[in-house]
Length: 299
Image (cartoon, rainbow, N blue to C red; front, top):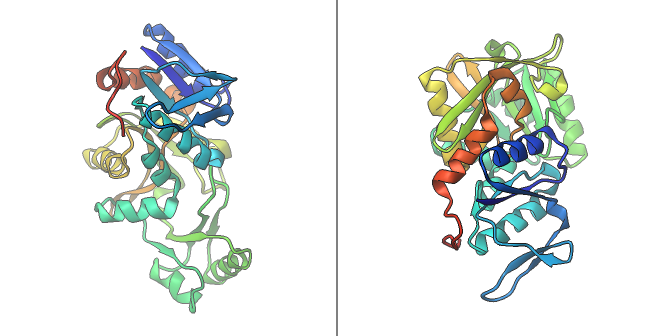
């Protein structure tokens, strides 16, 4: 198959692994810088252009859309959809996952386990907002934050009030969530492809840190999931319409709860921790679902 990877940096581990795995399986792989694509939106013959030329027909694309370019990136994915190209993750699913508030509301509506979460614009009673999620300590998150940036643990009610007031003074959109103390600074990254969890790792926060992100110094180890944890990850992916994603869950006293669903999960940590060829599994999914050398159903 002829497959394009939408990625801003061909040197990234995840992009390099996708190229390597795809070529090893006999596919023709192109890496395309998303922001350098531009669209010709025309009746009957919509196309994507790149470096002054019309891009060839691709049997499938693998979107690796960074959070900072979500709007333009999903517009490009949508153009490929209109052209009938099979997209590993569709544009609307990527958009849903990037909106933290919207994704939590969708997951709650599908009865997926979540930490109790509050969201407000100008609450008349900040104390009640904090109390409503279980009281201090609480986790306060910027809606637009990534890789643990903009996530603060407030250990007392006074600290939480001060942080919330400060963020609101900056007109920032924030979520206030209950702190899952029993998780012990660890979470589980479940890598979902299609309708199954193909790999999972436990990420442990560094000493003195509550955020388990590998970018924040966390460590990753292989973990075996319970049936409930697997079901939670798969249901979360399905609820948002994602075929390939990373679902981050915490082990709480009330069962697994979803913290975030990532539509462009990194491959390095999960492949290193599990020893699995996750990139290859993504191509197996494409082989099973894309229609090579044909105009797929447009949408």
